Structures are given as C-alpha cells and as structure tokens.
Amino acid sequence: MFSQLGDKDVHAARIEKGVIAPDLEENGLFGDWCLQLVGDVGYKIIPHTILIDQSGRVMAITDAKNITEAVIAQVLDGKTIDLPLKADNLEFSYTEDYFKMDTTTLESFVIQPGVPGAGTFSMMPNQGPFDGRRISMINFPIDGLYRKAYQTTVRRMDYEVDEAMFAHEPKNLYALGIIVAPEQREDIYEIMKAKIAEAFPVKARSENRTKTVVVLTTLEEGKVNLATAENETNAQAGSDHFKKQGTLAHFTDYLESYGIIGMPVLDETNLNGQY
Image (cartoon, rainbow, N blue to C red; front, side, top):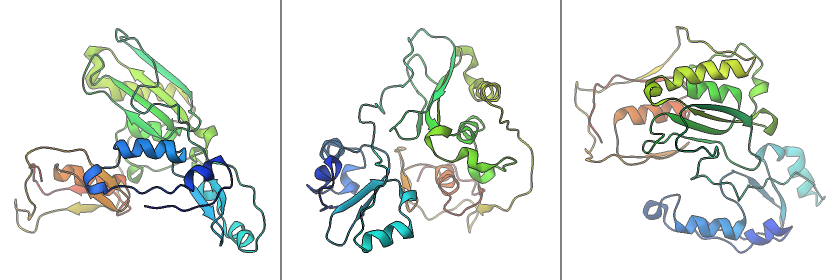
C-alpha cells in the first residue's frame, strides 16, 4: 500500500511521505507498523476518501459521500473545491473503556451523544470484575443499539419508521454504556432492550416473519472438506475476505453480518468442530 500525494494541508503533508505496509498475512491489521502509520498520516480508524487531481495534488480528504460526479468534474476542469475535512480523534482510546467506572460498580446505564472523530465499535469484557456484565458502544445510531441488544443483524430487521433517522451522521450517533449486577449476567441483553426503549421514542419488538434465507448444508451428512484447527483465533474479516480458525457458526455469522449474500444465513451443517 503506497501513497504519493500532494501537500494541500497538514494532513496531505503527512500523507505525501508515502506509507508502505508490511505483509498483512504476517503482521495482521493492528501491529506496531499501524501505530507508526497513525503518526505518519494523522489517521487512526475512521475510513476516509482522498481525492487527487491529475497532477497528484490532494484536493480533499473527506467522507466518501461528498465525492460526487459533479465534484469530480470540477476537479477535472481544474476548479478549486472546498469539502469538509474528515479527521480522526487521535486522543480517543480504543483499548480503554470510554465510560470510566470504578471496578466496584454494581449497576449503571449511560447514554450520551456520540464521540466526534471516533469510529463505531463496541466492547464487552470477558474477564475481570466486569466479565460478561458490561457492554460499551461508541457511535451507534438507535437501530444499531437495538441490533446489539437483540443480538441480530440488519438482514433480520424490518423498519416501520423513516430509516433516514438512522443515517450514520454525527447528530444520529450515541455512546451507550451498561453494567448489570453479577447475578444478572445472563439477562444483560434483556435489560439493555428495556433501557434503550426507555431512552428513545423509537421502539423495537421481536416477531416471527417469513423471509428468504440462505442455508448452509453439507453435501454428505456430517462431512466437510476443511482442515481442522485446534485453537480458535480472532477473525480477520471484511467485505471481501474472511480468515479465522473457528466453527462454521462463525463463518455463517460473517456471511450474514457483512452482507455477503444480502439475506439471513442459517447453519444447518450440524458440524460443531473447529476448522
């Protein structure tokens, strides 16, 4: 990955150095080189689009939605454009919980406006004092909060309201933090549903509906031509790739969550091994 760009402003000046990424197969997506990349180009997580003219000058570093055919035509005609800069919040930590809570906290529920310049992500501790009883979500629209609480995907959701209110824009984004009592670990998602419904006028409900789905099965009962794996690994996944040692359920979730097929996906392979 190499970028040789112009010097429109301080962001472009950083980018013009050019950055060569090491082999992702060996280093993964979040290695020491990535920390160096942040310092070099001034970006951390948020995807952004860089528009470059014919001579290699950086004309805009902005959101992809701002790069329209009309804008591109202006650049090709040599005209000056002025698009809003998309910049990361480099002070925001993606490893520490945004909601600073004492480890003795038994219960808590907080909803705040989104965090400017930070990406959209969630975390749930699987060890320590908050193991399995804390969820923190940053920069989610209301439907995204409900999606987490119902443990579902957009492929299984029907909207009876104007979806424009959930557009991924700063005014529609929220930060949510919930902690439940240790004896309520198993009920955290049910409690979360109720808390979100109390906080917003938009409501959600579960009901059975008929939908077209994709079903994963084996050609021969109980057999699959995949190499087995002893240990589960974290997934490296995107809209065009998936790499993980895990179960078929993980792969099924990837196909649905990333919209690879564009509809719900069911795993009926009856295979519980790791591959």
